[in-house]
Image 1 (cartoon, one colour):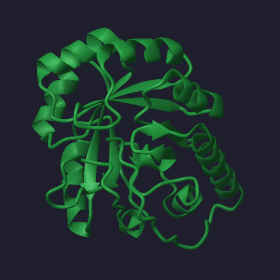
Image 2: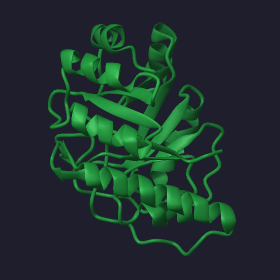
Image 3: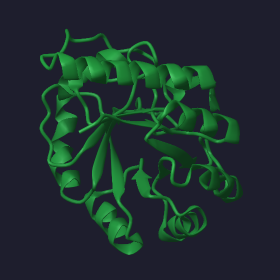
Length: 237
């Protein structure tokens, strides 16, 4: 299966076009007011119109209630919902059933103990997003300048596809792809020049590096050496 690349936290037509032009498979919009990447429904409708049919459209929410989710689904008509809060497996299942959309659940990882939650979410989500766990006391579930040890998930065998996030940027995504061989990678702050401000050049560089690593891995399936993780966090929030 080809590596899927998601550029998340897009909020302007220019940066959306940069992601689409560089070949992103998915684009993400953040519906979470405390985030510098938050978009309102009117903006989302404009962005979706540009992206429809060119990439998968993912709506990211954080512990949203049904009314909020309904408004997002009705206005933006996303292809997938990304749940990036403290949603329980029961809540994930309920959202998936109510809205009839695929659901990707973000799982924060800091230590091997955090992997224990994966089976319960695997049973109810269509995809998992393995992200850096926010530091204690952090105001946001992502975008906190942290990463996790990718070697914790090296060789991970899941029944659902997953995306790797947290600490990715144009300089290290190739190492992550070689080490983990994830079905997908997700980036947000790693392609920004300031919080919430995407950089088209960094978006293009990220896609190039990820695709090159994928191609190299196909030629040399044994992969490369373990990589050092970056301190730059790229959670979609």
